[in-house]
Length: 248
Image (tube, rainbow, N blue to C red; front, top):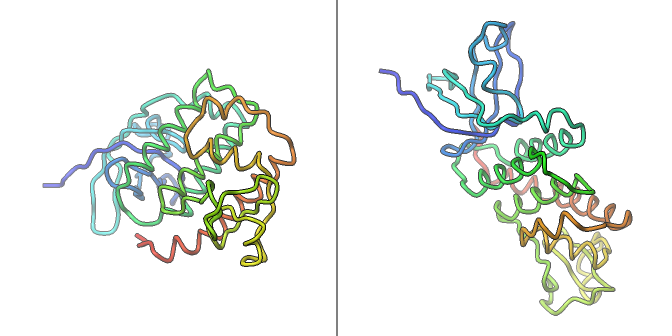
């Protein structure tokens, strides 16, 4: 007798196969990342079409064969119209999906990641989602995501000497995993000078203080710094993360 598995998950990637098939990459509550094959789902009369698509949170049912997992049922948990009808929200959803695809390669349950995805997508899919800078939603996800993976940045003290930070002479060091002081910048020639506003934003993000974060007015210079250190840390941590993961 074939065993059917049920779980719920976030669909972050899809790819067309043959004439009418499709595969989905799903981060699930019970199994972590899964690659699930959907037979003939692209046909107009497919009963599965309405229940699963990229950026959906869906209840899914599947069976396991020798070489692949096959979708047998899917039901969307909530309507994602507030995302797919807003280009800015789509960009946030795309960036989060790429991060999941890049950093999570093995099938391993992780409740913290699932809950973080659920939290962020509930926010951006809400009609009440109001924020001056939509990309902050991505940074909120990204830095908390890396923290769950074990790459929580040091933002309270100098990551090298552990002394109190001077808000006027601070740098972000990928090498040392966080903020370092002027005295220690010689230990990392690639450290990027930042300002106290960026530190404030990172602290709010990692405290998960969304209420305060969403009301911030961020100057362009600080926004550009946040983008730069986030992109740099992403590229620095990614190879390290994958070297320790098990691919499916």
